[in-house]
Length: 164
Image 1 (cartoon, rainbow, N blue to C red):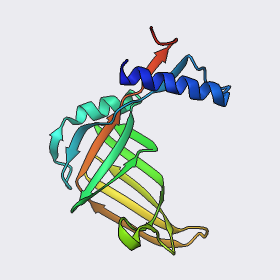
Image 2 (cartoon, rainbow, N blue to C red):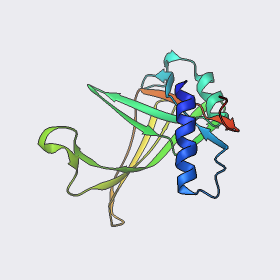
Image 3 (tube, one colour):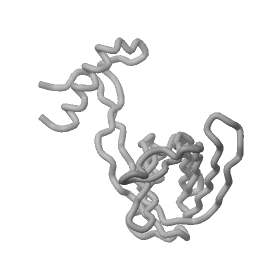
Image 4 (cartoon, rainbow, N blue to C red):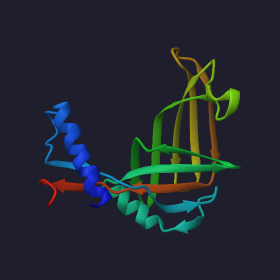
């Protein structure tokens, strides 16, 4: 049995148990794997892949995720909102809370945490805004450029029960 068919069956079972009235258990979208389709340097110059693949996938409703490599760490975030215009892709994420560290005793959220909003595009531009958690206090606004990796996850419409 294929991985996609297994994911489909599991999703049908979960939706059946949850009683999702707005979701028909026999018709839904499922995405299975992220695929790196395009990357660029901090100036938006292509490094790998083809931007037209990203543009067409985004226009077709694929999920989009962005990786921003920095030294030995790469941060990833899913695009909650995606815009496509004139061959340019823009991604926005507003659901990040600041972290204190990634390993050892510094692992966890910062004591004085902030919401981190980010918007990036395929020209290498990144706009970041930070606001205190629980208060409307501006913690900074930064604009810079960075290399990025763009991933897609195709959403395949599954109609009817899986074939035996």
